[in-house]
Length: 86
Image 1 (cartoon, helix red, strand yellow):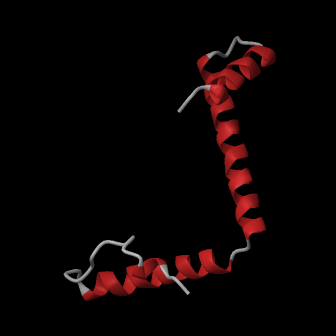
Image 2: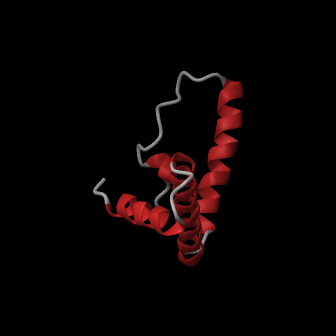
């Protein structure tokens, strides 16, 4: 099985202090284990939930910037924002 720690994705920690390594290694190990054991369906559900939250945050930002805009105007601005190239 391929592990992220052996893939070169992590910085070289050869010179890090032992206390740092104990704390960070435990966090990384927990994150890696969670990533390896979370099903694809659960990862998709989490991604969609985050997307919904991001859209709601943008909607609130647009509402704060234009408090007199109608709900339809806010949704039109949100649609424009969502379709803008990134």
